[in-house]
Image (tube, rainbow, N blue to C red; front, side):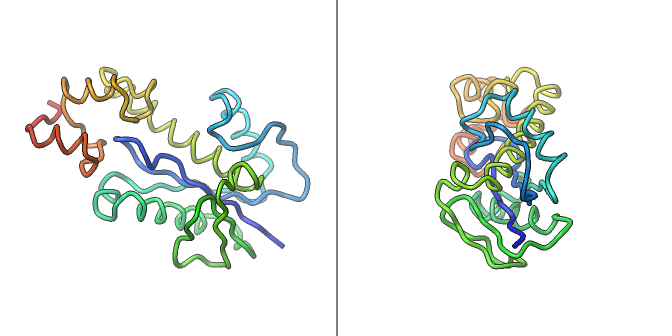
Length: 193
């Protein structure tokens, strides 16, 4: 049975896209230390991401951008990113295992949600790593364009540093305008100039 693991990254931040990945692993693989991406160092995630891409039978990374997040809400945008990730696989799995407690609609195979699946099921752990490293890459690119915001450090989360930068420099197009802290600063007319 061909099983795909699916996970998302980036539901909570105030900026950037929400990412999802889908991974199908072979029966045998060499991915020492693979677990939930949140339990791994950035260096270990980066190492595992390249190993996963090299060894997987199929893998796909997809996202939903800030406009889609504003239109759909973050939950439905994450579901859209997951559907896109599964659709991007080079093969159709027999079963799809998704981290969390919800299954996106319209998947091409039977699917099951697994709470804390990123710590329990290796395919979901692999998807967790790919989604997280892709999202981090987007934040590093944003940090190069807008160094004053500190995206390389807080990855878009609502830290004190990020909130202070928002107040000082204004809201970027990459900020999630429907998230309360961003909405409050927009209400003051604070757009990035």
